[in-house]
Amino acid sequence: MSAHVLQARDVAIHYGGVKALDGVDLTLEKGQIHGLIGPNGAGKSTVIDAITGRRPLTRGEVTLDGEDVSHLGAVARRMRGLSRSFQRTSIFGGMGVRKQVELASYKMGVKDSGADADAVLEELDLRRLADMEAEDLGYGEQRRLDLALALVGRPKVLMLDEPMAGLSVQESHDLAHHLKTLTSRWSVSVLLVEHDMDVVFGISDVITVFELGRVIAHGAPATVRADPRVRKAYLGSAA
Amino acid sequence: MTLTRMSLNALLAVVAAGVILWLTTSNSLLGMFTQAVIYAIFALGVGVLLKQNGLVSFGHALYFGAAGYSVAVILQLGWMPAEWAILVTLVGIGSASFLVGLVIVRVPGIAFGMLTLAIGQMAYLLAVRARGMTGGSDGMSIQWPNTLFGVSQSTLLKPSVLFFVSWVVLVLVTCVLVQVMRTRFGAITEAIRDNEERARFIGIRTAVPRAAVYALSAVVAGVAGLMSALNTGFVSPENLHWSVSAITLLMVVVGGVKSLAGPIIGAIVYFLFKDLLGEHATHSMAIFGAALIAVIVFSPDGLIGAFQRLFKRKKVHP
Image (cartoon, rainbow over all chains, first blue to last red; front, side, top):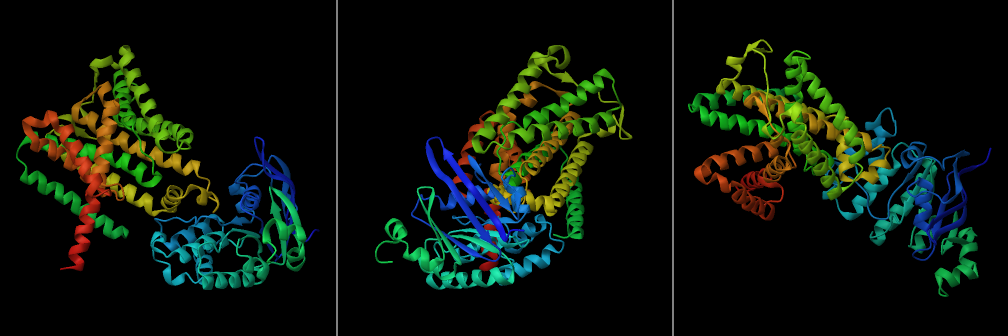
């Protein structure tokens, strides 16, 4: 059996004549952090949308643990363990912090959803804010709550779309550290879209670089950093 | 709020009805109170849709009027006893609105409102045109039996009894809605209302719960329609008209949508306001419209929001 927990083959999403993604191949190993980088509009977030079922595929196939999930909707893919956070914080503003995390856990079919919610809140240092309404949280706390909603039910794959956006340097550093430890302790694989290059190159096991909906480089951080195409397309000569 | 506390509040509400009856000697005033309570039930139906689904309906008069027509037609044709007709009407409204809801709740925002308006007006025109069955524009009388649920009609139609029954129904409907919102279903609908996309990505299928809230709100509007049919013994296409939906929506907005008390307060304020205007009541919509503007500008969360803020401020600065 393959060690790939997630595999995308020849994935394409076209909007009329615009090729947002075109023939993308991607694999994610168990417990791996896989960074996706590229300029704005390169197709990084669209890859997450394609894998999670938010956008229908024009072509290609997505498999999770060897099962083809391409034909499934977003809810069914989430139930199978494909989870995500969003570029813009996506939480339930009018609902209590614990209430929404517990609800998410319940919907994931976790038997003791209360305990699962508490464990996730503890992990992301949100337990002390459990009774607050989400809209009253600070921005950094809301980002962590977004992550908490994605983490309940112990997903197999966690796809994070710019989780550090808008966070302070310290908050970014803490979250990056969290992600690194989470992958081993919670046996979760991470697909990470992020513009903070220090974070991506610091915690990723492997990196894929996108440009205009296509993969232009792939490999270990050091290899990618040294690739002249990447330097030209994205990182610039100073990198 | 625990179940015990809610039961206590319900009991207090019923006692309050007794106090109102004791203090009110005028039958016309009691009639106005009864109408206010019936519209409070109707407004609860419209309000629960807005509160739990975040959807504005301009066509809930469809269910208000359809309840009256359904009972009127069943009793006229003698298909079944009135008690069964009431039950069948509510089940029918619940089932039909759930199916309608499955289609229309997928449509967001103003387009949803326009769809409800279109469906409601279709029913209005149908009632006007189907003269043979509905009496057309003239409406139709409802042939209530001599006894309903073991109570004689002469007793039931006394202004004080009608008011008390309507009040008890309002309390019961409120208790049921409060309980429903406390369940897992309530939390799911809140999540969908707040962020439908995120709801899908925590494993919630969103169409069925939204349709269920739509059906629940339609049934509550249907209950109000039945109470109105009992109160007036008559139903006409006017009960289905969009303006009835609009007035009820107005009550909800003025009262406030964030809690169930809002629509109830909105309905009561509307009728008290109309009564206070006396001979100027023909201009009530213009004056109530101005009040609506004032509420939206100064307290977007309605009168209940203003009360809550006032209460909080008093607590902070005694």
